[in-house]
Image (cartoon, rainbow, N blue to C red; front, side, top):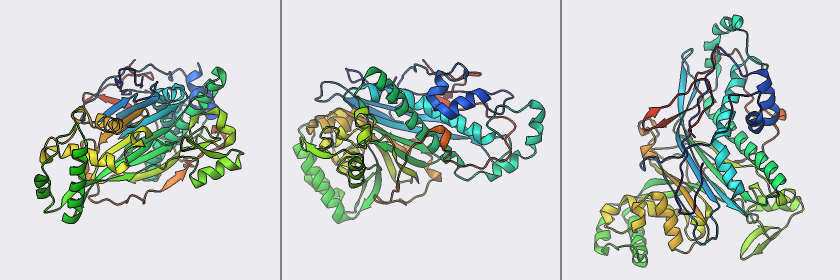
Length: 490
């Protein structure tokens, strides 16, 4: 369970899924048909797909060096934010060597900011990993099966072994990234479909944002709905003149912060003489607010209107986001659940932190302020004990409490991933290749399963067997494998 309880304890879900397929080249034809027409929700409901069962996952903590999480209720009556992370999903994709899978390590960090209740954010945080895993499996199964009609007879398997190497050689270089992206988009679509059905039955008014970051093969993808944010804090060298301005700003900020011990200005002055390495913020998402030109056009075209209430632009004077999971009342007025995607971009050696957070943090902070705070924590030994005491708990606690002290009224949740401790930087580019405005965003509209195949992968000859394991989660540097079932801790 990924939730934030009253005492602000963050429950971290680390996910274990293993699927063993013995002498089977594809999923059963019945289950494939169920998947084709109903997606993940139908598969998990069906007794004809016995491998797939939703689990209540046990939550446990992870070393702080790997990931930092925090959430606070703030000044609201209820906590509606949810978050999750899973940094060690190992997924076997086809390797260039016949019969040998290539394990791809995948990380997920996500925040869901609920409104008008926590039902939508809670469901999204509960279902994301299960749905994501299922879609990866079925997309791989479809790719490696000659037909979507069920398993091949064992007597025919040897015929395909002859061409399996040619099949693997024909796969696109970024085949695994295409699969991961498509699986995530389908998972988001299914989460919204599942909640829509639940909300209709129970007469729920709630909705939620969703900002989800995927890390794989040294690359990063972000899908977002609503106004939760994802950003990178990346090192950049500042000239002595730039460094002086940065340190003066830091000094003044510390003087204003009652929980800080400001360094002597003379000490800071010494630091900028030869320049400075500073964190620069690169925002990876665009807020879906109804006053954004393209969002407003869609709302108005659907018969809705945008007006301000309490100084915030709102759909029909009420909803502050123009995209969300749920919010059924506003679906006929142009509010959609389609994510906007920053497609795969390479992470580079100077990318230090990935931050995924709800918008409450940015009521009183700019994105650059968040990176400045993380930079202060990293360099506090150089500049003295100048950061608040709560920053010693975790980097995520540092961000949410900084925003709270500055007066944020909202719930706040954050996931901070130290990239340098989670990636092999020896193989990464040494310079930043994409600037703050260089990320390409795509609007992605999900369609029913029976009518689209976004991957459009050419199916040649299938491999003789599917991979023995779909996902393996790491706990304390050990890999847990369960055979013959779709399983998770619970």
